[in-house]
Length: 437
Image 1 (cartoon, rainbow, N blue to C red):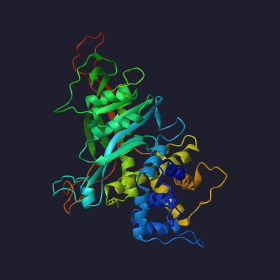
Image 2: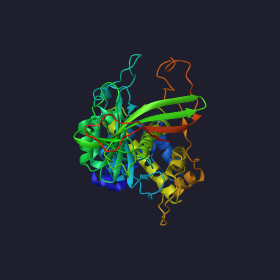
Image 3: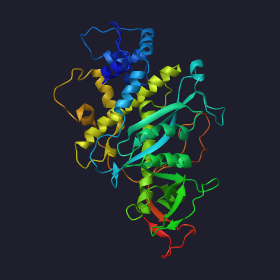
Image 4: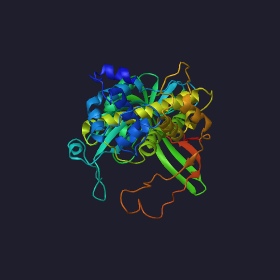
C-alpha cells in the first residue's frame, strides 16, 4: 500500500538513498506509536530489531530533509485508501435496525508555537490568557460500533465545526444514521445531510436561541412531526433520569430525526440510540490521550502539520481495523470489548522487534495485534456515570473548584418521553406523557 501511495503521488525517490521514500513513510507512521520520542529516537526503534543487518544512521537534519521530500501527498492518499467503516458482521453494537450508526464531532490538537505555524494556526482563548500553543481543529465521521474513521478533515480553528462538516458529506450515503450534538443543529447543514439520503439524529437547543419546531402532527409514542431546514423531521422531547447511590439527576433532551416512521423507530429507542454518540468522544480520547498522551504535535511548519495529522489518522485507522478484524473472528463479540491500549502497545512491540518484516503466504485475519486483543478482552460495558469535568487544568488552579466529586457511579437510567406542544392540526387520539425506561 505504501509503494502504491508513493507511485500514485509521484513521490518515489529518483535515486538510491539511505532513506528511500517507503522508509520515510514507515518512520512517519511509527512516530505515532512513539510520541515521546523525537524522529531520531523513532528511527532507533525502527532499526533495533534488525540485528546483524547494516542500516543507515541518519542525522536529525537528514530525517527532516527526507520528510520534506516525501511531503503530505502519500499520507493523504493512504488515509483515503484506508478510511471507511470496518467490514464486520451485522451484529451487536455496530448496526441499529439495519442502519450503520455514525457520529460526527470535532476536537482540537496543539501544534508547536513556531512562527511558521502561527501564520496559519491561531491560539485559543481562555480565562488565564489563552492557550500556550496554536491549535488545529479536527472533524471526523466515525462508525460508532468499531470507532473506525469513515472520513476526517482538519484545519485552523478559525473555521467552525459546521463549516468543516460540509467536507464530510461526500462520505454519507443511504443506510447510515448520523448522530450529532447541538452544534450541528443548523438548518442548512440538516438539508445537506438529508440530500445525501443518510438519516440523522441530532440534538437541538431547548432554551434561548432554540429553533422553532412547530408540531404539525403528533404520534402515539410522544414524538411529533415538524420541519427543520426545509426537511420533514420528527421531534422527540425526553427527560433523562439518572439514579446512583449519590442521588438522582434529571436532564431534558430534544432530538430531531429524519426517521419519521414512529412504528419502526419508536421514540424511546431513538433516545437510547443517541447515547452511542459518545463513541466518537472515546475515539478522540484514544487519539489524544492514549496515542499522544496529551502531547503537542512535533511539526513546526503547516505542511509538516498536515503530514503528521494524516500519519496519526492512518495509524489510528490501522489499529482500529486490526481490532475490528480480530473481534469479527469470534461471533457475538462486541467490538467495544477490544482494548485500544492493548492494540497500541502490541503494535509498539512489533515495531521494536521488527517482527514479520517478511510477509508470510498464510493470511492471518487476527494477526499478532489481534491475538493480543482477543487474549485481553474488556468485560461487557457497565452502565456508569462520572462528572464531565476538566481533570487536568492548563493552569496551577483547580479546574472548576476544589470540592468536585470525581467518583464514577453505577447507575440506572430512566427515559420519559414528554408530551408535545399543541399541534397545528388536530388528531383523533389524545396524547399523554409516556414513560420509557
